[in-house]
Length: 226
Length: 182
Image (cartoon, rainbow over all chains, first blue to last red; front, top):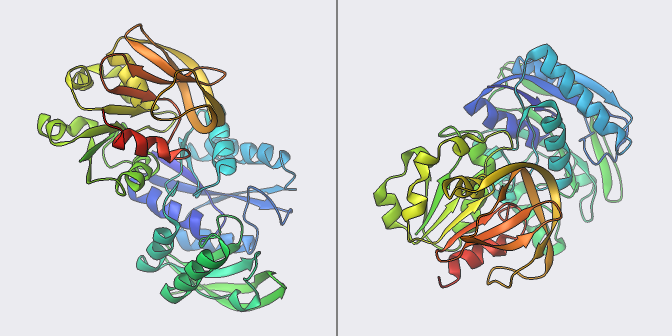
């Protein structure tokens, strides 16, 4: 089955792509560029890096800009998926939804309307297991946004490894934050993954936070041999 | 032993991650478990387990509804059996119930219409279906949503069908199904 992946460049959509490619044929990425930093639907930090990620994956990408207004962005998403179905003859869409019924429901509705299959391969999976899988499968993932107490500037740009997972799990115990950022506590950017033919090297970045809200912005990056 | 039947149209499918793994996450805390695809089920599998759970499938996957011959064991088994979504619809087809179009995606209010050991009152549940059942007289209705019947139970056998997805929200229903003396 030919599939398109809703792709933000973060760990969840990249891992979902990995699962999808194991079972079916991923033929393109679908990326929404939201102007709303607090979008309910779309991950925002370093969304421009998806261009390099698509090149690393050797996959074409459909890009749709959206102002990110709550229901209008769904119309934009539907338009992007419909365009992808037409251009790439996809039969289904894959998302990286883990816990969010809000996200899953809306993509399911759009796919149903367009007559497409909808797959959420990370749905309801244990968050600790998902984080550990990233490390086991040698994904290189950095924290590109923090948005909850007690996360701060020190977390920005840090790579997800066993040590960082332990620290996130400690915070889950103490502060009830979601260790994989399901409540929007953290955002991530993938620099390398098993399906990447090349990996991303960061050449210049800006890391800035105010209290418990901050973003690690990749200003310049390039693809290098793995 | 909990036997989880993978109802996806293909073996080793992408839908397995979404519709079977979340059931395993609940089952592994309750008992030993095993997953078999519906095309691979054997009489040994059916006799080795204590309870059976039929998984759901992606919205577009209705393959089992046209293969009632693969599920005749549902009429013969003495084991408590719970069908989730496509699993419930398949139970309906095997027992000769009617199907009709009924789309519910997302959180739905489910109301208990008959006192039962699995749940009570009104509650929110996650739905993902485009087909519902018109039950026959040998099944009783335990719960409804505004649009359709959400839970049925055979009047004399331990055969249950749930249209919503208890593995997504309301996991305690699965735990109670496994633990409730039958």
